[in-house]
Amino acid sequence: MTERTLRELAREGSLFLTERGVADAAFDARQLLAHLLSLDGTAFLLNGDRPVSGEDAAAYSALLERRAAGEPLQYLLGEWDFCGGTFFVGPGVLIPRPETEQLAETCIDAVVSRGLKTVYDLCAGTGCIGLTVAKACPQAEVYLFELYDGAYAYLEKNAAAFGLPNVRLVRADVLQSPPEGLPAPELIVSNPPYIRAEEIAGLQKEVGFEPVTALDGGGDGFVFYRAIAEKWLPLLQKGGFVAAECGEGQPETVARLFGQYLDCAVVNDLYGVSRFVTGTKV
Ligand SMILES: C[S@@+](CC[C@H](N)C(=O)[O-])C[C@H]1O[C@@H](n2cnc3c(N)ncnc32)[C@H](O)[C@@H]1O
Image (tube, rainbow, N blue to C red; front, top):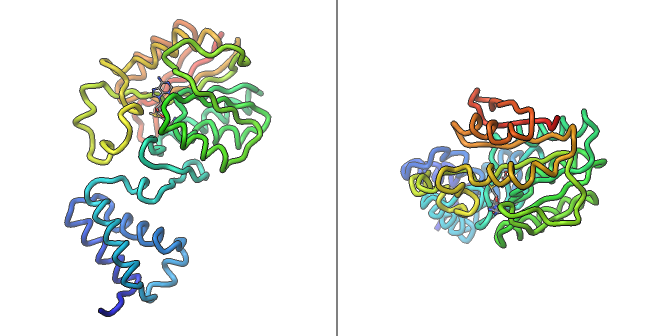
């Protein structure tokens, strides 16, 4: 059998995914092939005429089949970029979302402008928020809280890859009282599970591959915000800052919950959708 070139395989892959209804077929097909052959974007473009071995072509077909079946591209690649850093991802942990980058940037601004020292990232997952803040703010000590084994394993792996001295991982249940013996936070950030339990089954096929424990916000979607308000916000030092990501339609209610302890604001995402709640303890 004649070997096909990189360009031919990428085109075939794109067509295969398009026919199976994958939204960003060309992008995904290229990413998978580049990943398989360990090529970066430039090398991929420069090597379009390179022949691909039958073995690699077969491995590529297998990846395309899995992508067509709904496995997220990010899980197949095993890593994903967030705020300029690369995070290991895979089954068991939520894939960092682009809108969450705004949350991490908001925290960095607050740490820098207010000179905050102790940061808590509740429901840390991959650690994308807390590790990004820790990297940008070496003067701050960042505590990342996560409960579940699958996510915690990725958190440990990412923390090890970042290798930062100002990071502390804490295995804890955010719905329960905070562990004792830690310094009081000056900034609390969280992107907790916030989907209403009954909505989970109807989500996009790819989301079904992500752990339900990263999505399920309880019957009304507000279980974690209530726990954060009742159990964690009272720890916040005066002048401290809070930033939380919410589902669509949730920020106003979250601002009311947090408003018992904070002077709160609802903040839009880059698409103009109200998405975040920020607040200062007065
Ligand atoms: C929506 S994900 C967010 C992950 C990450 N912060 C991000 O923005 O990509 C929520 C995370 O909360 C974790 N989680 C769920 N229930 C928890 C609990 N009771 N205590 C601590 N973490 C929990 C999940 O395992 C998941 O990693």
